[in-house]
Length: 200
Image 1 (cartoon, rainbow, N blue to C red):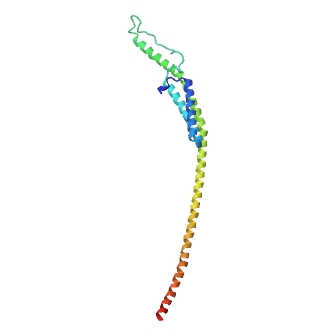
Image 2: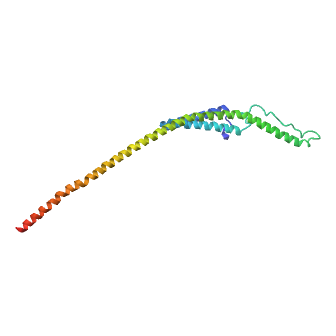
């Protein structure tokens, strides 16, 4: 995230909005039939960008973009004191560590409200995503119920076709016997004609 070093707070907020809007427009044109999903993805992306910006601010304590003024505490230089300077060197290092802790806490207090602003934006975006998730769940439930009805109708049609096919198969043996019967009846007549010819 070093590329953010030259971007101020207002520019950072503006770029988050711009990136989210560009994503919404591009993906919305690509997925025109899924605008609710695109809106949900845009809101989640906006929340992610704001949360990332808040984390970035907390990791850059002491940055002049969100730190106003100079550090409140500075340790005095005791080691340069004549005669007793060497004896005061440990005290000077202790004071420097205390001053550093106080200044770090001051920098954290300076950066925390700015980071909380971005975290609040991320939280509001997540709250806005809840109704979109509910709408998507309702649409998916309706689509699933519609597919279930279509599947039931299809299975009913298949069962009806199977019943008609079974009825057709049940009628096939009767037709076969009707076709074979005349052929069997013609055989005695042929035999009689042959015997009569032999008698002659």
